[in-house]
Image (cartoon, rainbow, N blue to C red; front, top):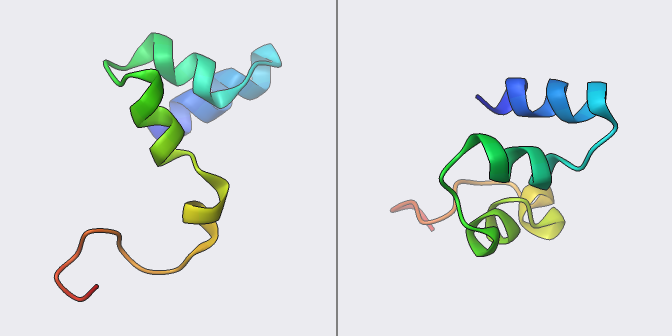
Length: 51
């Protein structure tokens, strides 16, 4: 699903967040958290048992 969202956003010249909002049930707040650039650049799995 992520690749589909990214490809559609690129093809239409739109923000990934806007396309994801249309194609998923995620709220704007959830998308803000998921697509936070600092979280995306930080290695590791968030919320995992290993920290």
